[in-house]
Image (tube, rainbow, N blue to C red):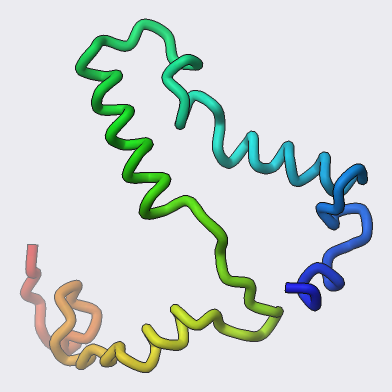
Amino acid sequence: AMQYMELLPEERRPVAGTAGSLYRHKQLIRQLPSYDHDPAFCHSLSEVELKAMAQFVKSFKEESLGVGEVALPGEKCTAVKNEDASQEQPDPETTTNGTAQSPLSNKSEY
């Protein structure tokens, strides 16, 4: 993570009390607006909607929100490496969109 931070321009490094910290705070507000995770910022929600939102926020915080993995430029993160290793390439003759069909075939799959 330290090497990644050094690759960021000085003015974008999120160090407390700097312009980079303010920039990161603004990014977070844009990426995670208050109304997406706090019903106090939503107007006129019904009880059903409040309960649905509470459940969504709970699952979002448990499953999605957190610290990510940093990959340096040109590297793949562990998840992508594992996915690439386990993913089998599809047979081009069996595609469903018709791109690998014989040029003599006029049949449409739609």
